[in-house]
Amino acid sequence: TRSSRPQRLLSVVKKRAAHGDPQSVISAIDYFCRHNEWAMNVGDEKGCILDSVVSELNPERVLELGTYCGYSTIRIARILPPGARLITLEFNPDYAAIARQVIAWAGLEDKVQLVEGASEDWIPRIKEHFGIETFDFVFLDHWKDRYLPDTKLMEECGLLRKGTVLLADNVICPGVPDYLQYVRSSPSYESYYFKSHLEYTQAEDGLEKSVFLG
Ligand SMILES: Cc1ncnc2c1ncn2[C@@H]1O[C@H](/C=C/CNC(=O)c2cc(-c3ccc(F)cc3)cc(O)c2O)[C@@H](O)[C@H]1O
Ligand SMILES: [Mg+2]
Image (cartoon, rainbow, N blue to C red; front, side, top):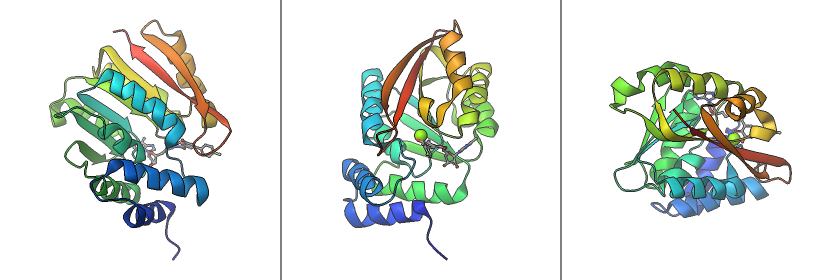
């Protein structure tokens, strides 16, 4: 049977990128997705915004919702300070298997913990299972109708603290209207929209950065 898109992405990484070199893995994926086959990675343009938000924050504890092939996982992990940890949740076992190999090829497995399962099942268990109090940074890039319920769940589970930064992908395309309305109107968040483009295209898209005020 025909290979999957994530399988084709992984084979490009192994063919074109240098083992242990995260930047070459990122460049190989971006080149392939721009010139050969589009895929729903955050991409290079929005990825640079992601990089700037992360490096300004220098987070110790990071949560990513929706790993897919691990592109944003390695973008974030490659700029984390020593000792910092990234937990990424992915419920599709095939995507998780690919992402593990992409993360390993980039040499970042020591900073990343890929957890297989649904965010709503794992968010309530993170504290006791991983010994984590709160997160400094959360990247939301999973099913768009899950952004709002999972944000409310993270609040309820006490995983956010004063100053925790949520960064949400695709707030224009495909769009997350209920989430946007919530973080922009709630007194518990200070929100800011980074205008950009849908990965590898000229369509408008953007990232919403929302600081939890407690
Ligand atoms: C509750 C739960 N728990 C755990 N893992 C979960 C989970 N819900 C989903 N996942 C996982 O996360 C990824 C899903 C990502 C969804 N992303 C998008 O749909 C997406 C789509 C576009 C897009 C834009 C214009 C188009 F014309 C077509 C597509 C662009 C994007 O950037 C996207 O992110 C995928 O790996 C899925 O298994
Ligand atoms: Mg996305």
